[in-house]
Length: 320
Image (cartoon, rainbow, N blue to C red; front, side, top):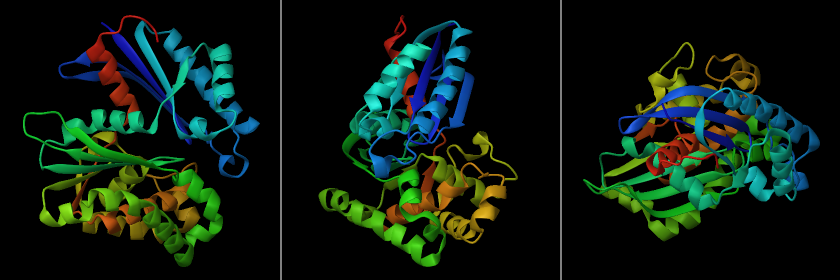
C-alpha cells in the first residue's frame, strides 16, 4: 500500500498527515498536530525567536520519528506565512533539514490558496460561485472561485491578508477581549478586505444568489463545535456542516461572552487556543459582515489534504 505524507508548518501549528489512496480520495493512516507558536513576536521583531524555533523543532523531530517508522513513498513539507515573513525563515528551515532530515519549501500565497481549494473541492458541488477563506495564524487567505457543473472549481482571484489570529492577538492583547477592542479588530480586518471586494464585487454576487461561503480553519471549526453544542470536538461532526448565518453569529456572541478563563475551559477551545479564538471570530465577523451569505460551509481540511491529493494524482515515487 502506497503511503504519502504531508507536513504543514504554519505560524501557530505544526501538522502532519499520512494517507493512502482510496477511491477518489485517501484514507488517513496517521496524523499529528501541535501548537508551536512559530510566529510569536514576529510582528514586532521581523524574526523567528529562538524559543519559537525550539518549539517547532521539537514538534518536527516528533514528525520525523513517526515518518521513519512508516513505508512512506513521498513526503512534501511546506512552510507558510511565518517563514515567508521572517528574516531568518530560510535559515531556520536549513537548520530543520540539518537536524531532522525534513526538506521544507516556503510556498507562495497563491499556492496556499490553491491547496486549500484542492482539499475543499468536494464540498463545492453546488452553486455558481464560492468564496473560500482560510483564517491562519499569520495570514488570512481568500479564494474567489467559479463553479461550473462537470468541471473542477476554477480560481478566479485570490488574496492573502497579512493578518491572522496570532498577529491580531499580539497587536490587541487583552484589549481584544473588551467590546471596544473586539470592534477595533473587526474594523481593522474589514478595511483590509475592501480592495478584494472592489476588484471582484462579491457582495453584489451574493445579492444575486448562488454564492457559497466556505471556511477552513480552527476558527470556523470552533464556531461549528459551539453552534452544534458538541461536548467535545469531533471532526466527523463538523467537516462539511452547513451552518446558518444566525448559528455562526450566535456562536461568536457566546464565545465573546465567556472571557479568557471560560474559553480556556471550553471543550472545543482549550487553554492553548484561548488567546486566538476572539481574534479569529473578529476576522470571521469582518468577512461575513462584508459578504453576508445566508450559510457558511465548514471544512475541517486544508493544506495537508491538498498536498496529499496532488501527490497521489502525480504518483510520485521518491521522497521530495
